[in-house]
Length: 89
Image 1 (cartoon, one colour):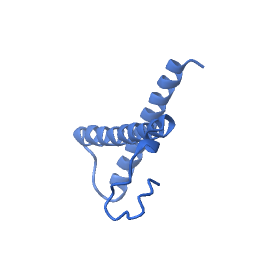
Image 2 (cartoon, rainbow, N blue to C red):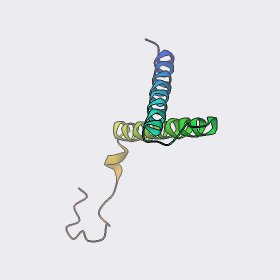
Image 3 (cartoon, rainbow, N blue to C red):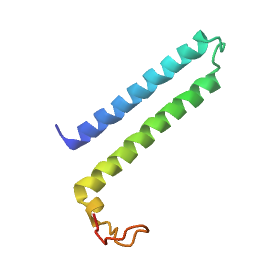
């Protein structure tokens, strides 16, 4: 499968997850007696869920990229306060 198709599928999956979470939270809101959620509430909740999912996805991608490229191995811990042995690990 081409990388572009995988990217599109991942984005679609993130949107489906955000939509399902928004719908579920809306039902929960009504179930606890919060009343009907106006259109602005649905839009705000959808943007909040989508933003949280997107931010989580981006930060995890950066963590995996950093690990794959070895950026974690290049940290020099010898000057950290409290380290007396000088061991970088």
